[in-house]
Image (cartoon, rainbow, N blue to C red; front, side):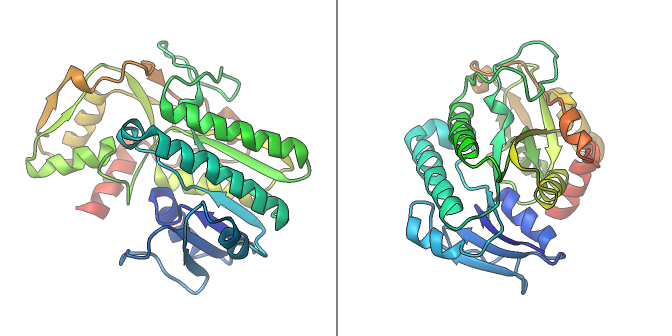
Length: 302
């Protein structure tokens, strides 16, 4: 049994993780900026606290006595980051500075950070990216995540006996995801509403949230001292046409989609797919392919 402090606990990954932890012996202190959610997962082993990453002394109090800290908080929507990169930067850099300090002071032995496949150099060839692939991010999200990774790596060098886990998560999807992301956006078009997406034939690696949660728990429940980086993905790249075909096959509906070159993200590579051999060696592999994950997601949201 562990006592775990989770930041970003009411976000997409956070709520799915807590949903799974409810059925374990772990205790959770769940940090959220807002207490106005009526759909939060509650249980005897889950305690919510309401504050933000900038309040160092409150974070220090909430995390006292914890064995592990899972840092999920951050601004991850492409459009939110592009519209206000300074807010995303402040949240990430000031946030991780406080997180590292409380890990040190409260002697928290395991630190987990959810990074992104966007930290890798843009790629236009169909080559899966391993953890040793060059880290030269071309997007704001990738740049910010990589800055946080570097600060955590320095912390790990100072504290080599602690467990530090970085997961580079590729394109997550599933229950509770915000409608600003592609898959929920496509689901919203099932009622006939027109949506605009790009069709540049780029391929992305989509990994289902249940598989992500399984990986998170595997890694924190089987800690290894030192700085550990793992890709989390499906290992399969899909383009928008393939995704739409799977949607229409499952739902037997025609999506109302307008393709636009204005939506293209010219600073991103044509191929973003994870090499997941390293985390497979730890005993994890995806239980869901895209069709299986989407089918389960549709059951939950429709």
